[in-house]
Amino acid sequence: MLGVLTLSLVLVMSGLAAGFMGALTGLGGATFLIPIYVLFVGMPIQYAAGVSLISTVATSSGSASAYIRDRVSNVRIGMSLLTATTSGSIVGALLASWVYSHGLEHVIYIVFGVVLLGSIYTQVARARYELPDPKPPDRWTTWLRLSGSYYDPVLGREVQYHGVRWWLGALIMFAAGVISGLLGIGSGALKVLAMDWAMNLPIKVSTTTSNFMIGVTAATGSAIYWHLGYIQPYFAGLTAVGVLAGSYIGTKALMKLRSATIRYIFIAVLAVLGVQMLLKGLGLYPGAT
Image (cartoon, rainbow, N blue to C red; front, side, top):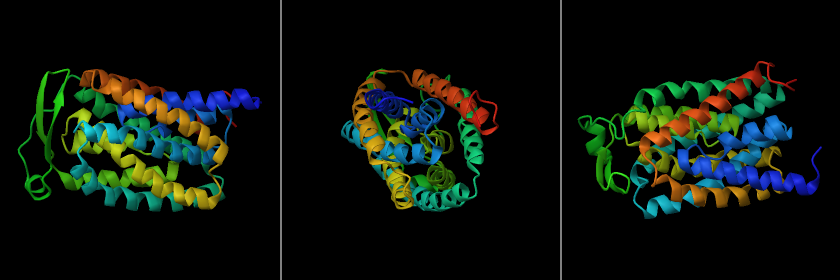
């Protein structure tokens, strides 16, 4: 059992690492915090999920403002997808209450692992491209004005882009919302997938717009988790302090990295965490009950 000071230090440092990686990859801190708290701190997953939802709001608050200021996040695209993801978040949070009351936590571990590992294939397939191959604009591109530009200091030029297949992105966003409410994460992996793969946006636009969106999605789910008593202020407060600092450092690092590098970091983290959570759900991880 960790002492108070040691536990406080672990919470802040875990938040720092999660905030940095969350801002860099667009996943939100929860994707990293839940495995750390469950596997290494021994926290029940429903409370780890509650803390992580608050940390996701903090990650979004710390990084989204910087990305919007630098015109990398596309607020118009993010807002057009928020209705789908927040609706899904409410469905997922209500579903989580039923799962916990029936002692089916292991199902959540397995779902979490599958979601993480399932996101790897598309990332590997696109890893060799610095920017996506342009696709012809469709009716959604024109109607919702799914276009924009940003200055990429690595490429040394302004990058013009437009999104396609908004309907497919919205469907994946609804699923991302359900997973967010169910697992207590920002579900950034699916959000990045929806914009990067389905809508063919540059990875830097996808990750930064995901950072903008995950805060709204997580805030919706956290209200229900608070009502259920799954959010402990001590854990949430210390974690949020570390997350805010980490997300600030992450925003500075992202624009100095190549898109391919960000993808490889994204893939490595998804693989490690996905395998750990899947083994935990199947009762094969050391210490699993």
